[in-house]
Length: 204
Image (tube, rainbow, N blue to C red; front, side):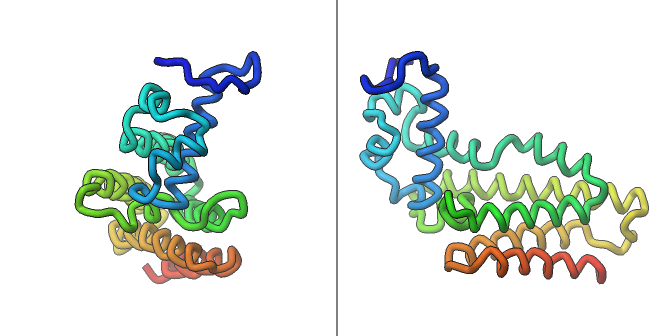
């Protein structure tokens, strides 16, 4: 891996720290502008790295985006562990919705969900990027579904409760909250959507 520290970087700061910092900046750019609209020149300027250094550290633009996406989502194993260890599927799902609402309306980050906004205007040439984000959403939905099924098996939820439908409702709610946040909805309003969505569990 080529050295890419700028001459003005602080002495003693580890290179992996600088790469993490650069990746976070790339994540914010993709989140705000989308995959296709974010140019290499914009990435280079904001990451404080020239193009060859970006390629050496992260690969091409698509590889950089996927690494930024991993940073945004976090490890899916951590989401799975959270769902497994929560007191119930209801509490786990509600917490995921609340945290999503808070994240989508943060003042220090772009609004909405990066999984949706980064590929909203992608062309057919970036179909593989769209497929990747869709697979991540599907995996999260599957993890919620598995947790609901666990509660049905343990008789916390009735057998008539549709794990598939309510897991899909959760992911649809997340996408809807993302759109509202991108449109400028307040955190209070987006959190209300999360709360209202969970009311349907009482009639499942």
